[in-house]
Length: 422
Image 1: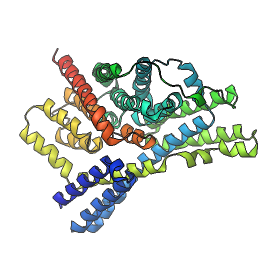
Image 2 (image 1 turned 120 degrees about the vertical axis):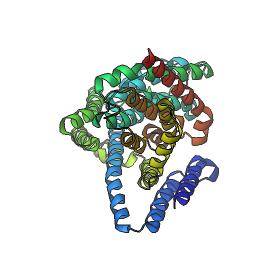
Image 3 (image 1 turned 45 degrees about the vertical axis):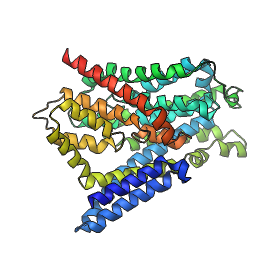
Image 4 (image 1 turned 90 degrees about the vertical axis):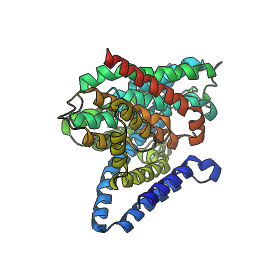
């Protein structure tokens, strides 16, 4: 069964990677792979009721992620429908490609610790689409958004699922993760920026539709933009206070946006009112990318449930004596499989009795599994969201961004090790 599951996962991964060559949208192979993996698992299992229970449990976890993604995308679409992003895009007057690349990357890096890397990717990509008209010109920018959003997320306890898991598990504390991770994280962004910047020269072609002026009143734009960002920032606060999962926060935030958007729309003509409504925003979100996300999560869940990921972690522990090397490899693996089961496996492998809170292994694990996901476009939630929202291709990312992200990843890792050895 193990070999069959690995084969199905590999074939599905190949189909996703070469979607443009086989001319099949990545959502289809992702869903087929996910369902086939669970089918093989239950057929080979003696306890089929247990497998069904495990599937229901995983779907409960996935629904939280998918509802969060749907809510965040809808909030962004509501802001966009009311031209809220125009307030920001008009402030970004820089047209020099190199300088703009640094500005966009800085926005993603410093927004991610507050909103988390997934929400940040959705917001910053939406901003970028308003600034740069040519999809081809946006490609390297999109790659840097993935790298910067993931790097920014690891130096905050709420910026990335890996740091959140370790924070809630008692392996790290908020203050220490910020102090230990900020410098390595920023190094992992600056190094790729230094590599990519020379590829750019001249000025961008500004998106004309983003600078023509909006038919919405400036007051309404500010109300929607400030409300939108406020409810996004509110999500981690809601989670910390109530201990409810993030999707509950995003859903109540969406409801607040819904009320405000409809109140604003009531003063419009009926046709305009519908085009400004949250119901219309829900129609505009990319449902295919949400289903793609579901397929990926289903596939990886089987690898976790069957113990394949845990066995891999134990093999590394037995064969490799150096803890830093193990964590580095786990970071590389997080670009292929979800970092959540990797963190869960590590939490089981390394008890707090031997590796106490804020031990360097936990900090390094947060860095590696968080930034390692940038090496492949589908290695992180931020990357999957960017891939779903844009025309960025897996193979293009692999050829042009992956090696740069790898150098940034290793640069930050070396920086962390050097700081810890001082």
